[in-house]
Image 1 (tube, rainbow, N blue to C red):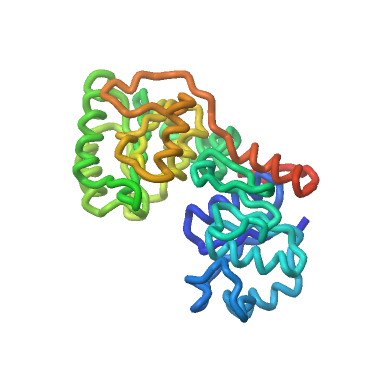
Image 2: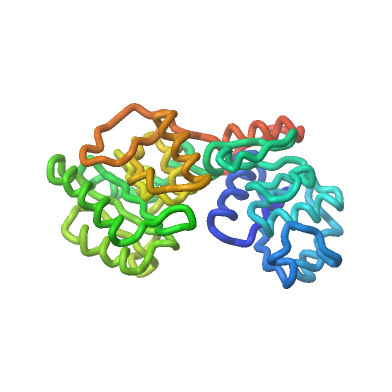
Length: 320
């Protein structure tokens, strides 16, 4: 079966589309969509000439569509909508903000409250994190095995439309974590995201300069150790702003602590409340007491639902 994934290249969108293709056992061609005006702002609505929205190459590719097209984000939604008109089966990830009937299936976070006969809900987001991925990640970062335990993975984002995570918030978080480290020792494996302010990244380096572990704030710090952080963590502390980051942390077998979830509003708050109610995460405190967890593996469940609904034959999952 020929499969394409289509997104605007943003990490969160491309990662979700690729993760679903992999979970379906399909090797996919990845399309990076670069829309022309006015389609960039109008997507996924169809305007006259929409087949030219992504340039000549994509317009020509519409003549030979894949069996399955998986899009994520607004640009991916326009591309898959176009592909459906020429015969492809289509899956749109994330709420397209128009009638979901324009796609064969829409996979949307439950906190978006999208409903429809062809809508598959999920708690959080899609990603590649499973036992095979974690095993490969441990192999890729073997030096982390020698760090003092407990190993605390610290995953930091930044402010968003629904929450504020700035230098003051980081200082409060790190003060709580310092209390834990003073009592139990261990190491810190910290990383930032694209949304993290520069001053916060600099503060992170200063705070943990003398603490065993690793701090990564960008390419100047070497290869991104994020997979190793998730794979070797005994516990994970997350800032509250990123649904994708928290979803991936919850797919591990480590307890996950979210800093001040009450500061989050809107739809992401519903996501955090669902995780708290399930007992998969706890609000961060100054003890980080361990608790039993069940990994949240929505990608495999969603893939099984997509396979059943679209009649996709089972095939081996590609290696992580």
